[in-house]
Figure 1 (cartoon, rainbow over the protein chains, first blue to last red):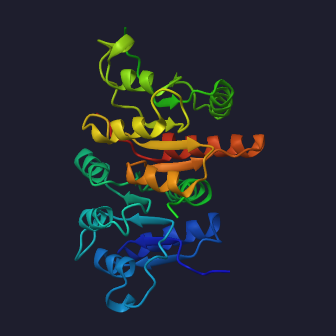
Figure 2: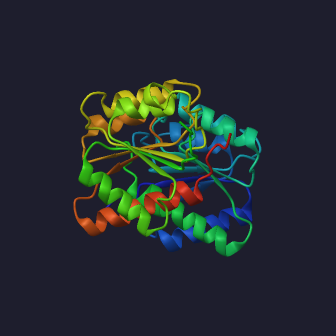
Length: 145
Length: 147
């Protein structure tokens, strides 16, 4: 049995992290999740750099969930780097954001986001949305490897 | 021809698979605005308002394109490539829905820009559930680009 990371959550907000982690843990307990607090740490993980130096980068997650509003490497830049690099561009990457703004949605699809989910405000709707994300991306979608 | 607004474009040449897919979506109340085409050529004509769909006006508010791979005439991969190459259509989510579990097909579809890839379950119940979950995620949870 492998305990390779299957979900990489890129989110800086502590309470959102807790909500996503808890909801995914409920709907998809068998899918190990790693949360990093910014885009820079996400890229370090994916490319085996910084504190993740030496990680076998061929072990790609099944799903990357990425927030947009983050310090240091902004969500869109992180998305762009993931989708431009041959080693990571096939990884399903879903933006999970409070923004419903047309320019954000358009730019993310333009940069190659596989999906885009607006974080519901109400906690029961939030949980439901996250469980739908898990149901599709972790149980049904065929990952690239 | 007046272009209705559609949420789903189903590109599937196998009549019984198409019927099962539509029925599964209908059961979840997700098939109201579904357009089914039988081959890649018709899919491209529909998307780009050509051939028999000429003058219809581009419907860019499709939330999801479900695309089979094994089709005669224009192959699924070629349709995927054409959709993802064209500025007008490349932001529409495309989910490949196919019986192929071949690594080479999966990798190639992601490389061509497929948003997702689903292997059609063989068992009826599993197929139904997969289609319902696909519908729920792509039609309800996912945010499409609304033009």
